[in-house]
Amino acid sequence: ETTTGGNALKFYASVRLDIRRIGSIKKGDEVIGNETRVKVVKNKVSPPFKTAEFDILFGEGISRHGEIIDMGVAQRIVEKSGAWYAYNGEKIGQGRDNAREFLRENAELAYEIENKVRESLGVAQLAPQAQMPAASADEAADGVVPAPAAKGKKSDQKVDGALAA
Image (cartoon, helix red, strand yellow):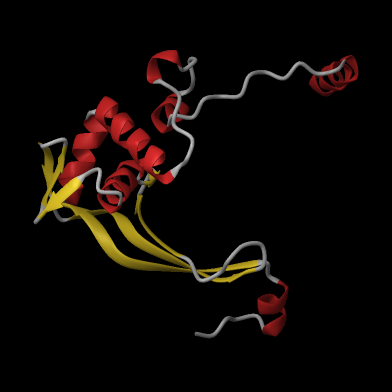
């Protein structure tokens, strides 16, 4: 594989990623996204040569529900037998696309599976949905809790006031 731009670009870059489309995601005949593989070619800040595969849905971004399914299967939280996906003995869909849509429609189940995956990986769990403060629709869908407003110094408030004027 050759990189355009000469040797300086390869040398001075801290991180280089090889991003490839490995497939299309279709709904009927219409293509609604891409299956993507990213390989770290060079990384000066952490170990290189890692790979990641995920779905990118047009107009939506990286499919969170698809990742929940993939990681759930990898951690043996979601059972996969043939084309069927099941959680706690309950079938959630035939085929990955149907399972992804099922989780999109059943946010509480997706939240439960994601927290079990996070627990098995030793990653901090999401805040309980009932206790989450009001957020924008995007933040609520991602489970991201907005940071509380910082109480700045008076000098910061003067700067903010000057910028507003």
